[in-house]
Structure formats: structure tokens, C-alpha cells
Amino acid sequence: MSRFECNHGPALRMAALRGFGLVMQPRILVAEDVVAGRLVPVLEGSHPPAMPVHVVCPRDRQLLPKVRTFIDFAVQRFG
Image (cartoon, rainbow, N blue to C red; front, side, top):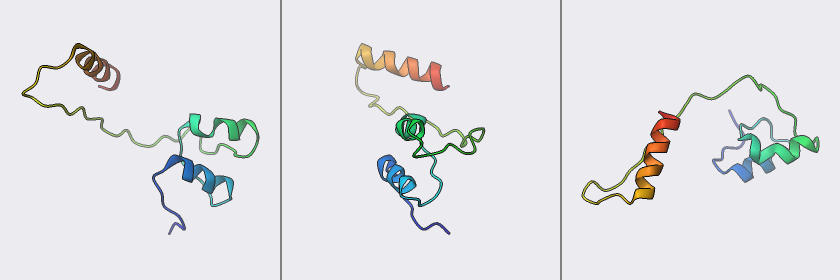
């Protein structure tokens, strides 16, 4: 059973820095702490399962070109 549950990256980072245990965070959020030696990466070969990404927009409206470009990019990049 965990002592602390949170879905806010900065709060999880602080919990790790204060010794609450392991956290799973994007590398960019903890990079400075790793370089400074405040945090140590573990289980680097482990990755969480992929999560779906959804793009939601109204059907009855014409999409702006920049929105269409983003959707095309997201589909190509994330499948």
C-alpha cells in the first residue's frame, strides 16, 4: 500500500526528493536533480504501457488549417 498518491509531477518530484520512495516521471522533470545527484534513476529499462491519445473536435465545424495539421501530425506520430 502506498503512503502517497498524486498525479501532479512537481509534487511527485518533491516527494522523491524528500525520500518518499520511487516515482515515475518524464526525464525532463527530474533531469536537473539527476545531474545534481539528488535523485538516482532506477529501472531505466522499464517503461509504462502506452496510453491512448484522443483528439476531440466538433464535427459540425470546419477545422482551421493549423488544427488539421496538428491532427495529421498526431496521427502520424502516435498512430
